[in-house]
Length: 102
Image (tube, rainbow, N blue to C red):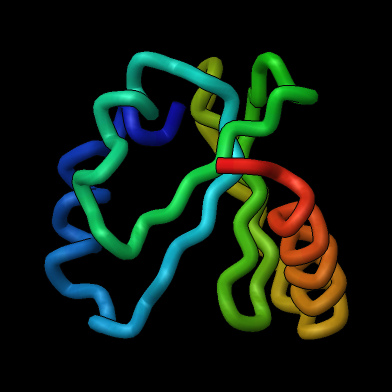
């Protein structure tokens, strides 16, 4: 996962992040995610039992949609600047969030 390869960058990002930033993540259970639980108070995670093994990440950040692969090399990220796509993915994730128990 991204956390396995870039923990130092994640730590640094939280140090400089806007204090109002909240991060909401879906994941499958993993040792890495277990270790991350509670490390950052504004990092919220739900484990989706319907997905046994996420193999990439999808992020919505402002008007950007990011698709990230760190499962196998070469690692890559695709960034799409689109208010429309970001909006629709954000709405999808909000709806899904409400259906999953913590």
